[in-house]
Image (cartoon, rainbow, N blue to C red; front, side, top):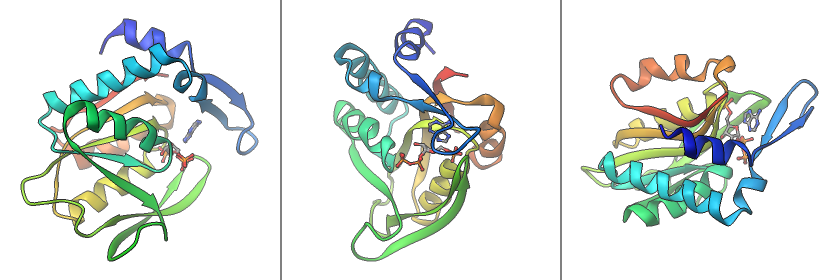
Length: 180
Ligand SMILES: O=P(O)(O)OC[C@H]1O[C@H](OP(=O)(O)OP(=O)(O)O)[C@H](O)[C@@H]1O
Ligand SMILES: Nc1ncnc2[nH]cnc12
């Protein structure tokens, strides 16, 4: 991973103590998003990784994952698939419940989101406990698609998300631009 890109982007992430709950240090990416150079560099990176991994679809995890995955898919010439919080997608969906650093939720994907032969890149802003990403991997497997890789903007290593995901990923790469 490029240390220059990591340094550029890390400088634009703001720590917000005790949000959304006491004891959580929230990683606010809005200063990165509203900086044209940083946002473009991150989108280019996601597009490059999607192409290099042969992804035909880029999955974004609601909501912050959408902001990164959709332009990344466009940059790669791939399709975009939203994994959404419960009740937001129309039609037949697969559902998965999970716990994350500061709560619990249910995410869903449409049953027909993927076509045979699709290779999927999963994109999100933060890997914390890994609960969200693990649930997304489960959904993608249940929907019959192959995961080509997982790309996160940042990984909060002390929360153990990587260790949680590795058994599910095998040889599939899990990449984070910034390691914390
Ligand atoms: O590794 P975990 O412990 O599961 O945490 C990571 C998830 O938490 C945040 O999403 P959140 O559910 O807060 O949704 P948002 O993007 O809608 O704010 C973040 O965007 C990741 O999706
Ligand atoms: N500390 C954190 N900051 C931002 N998003 C998160 N998702 C889970 N933990 C988070």
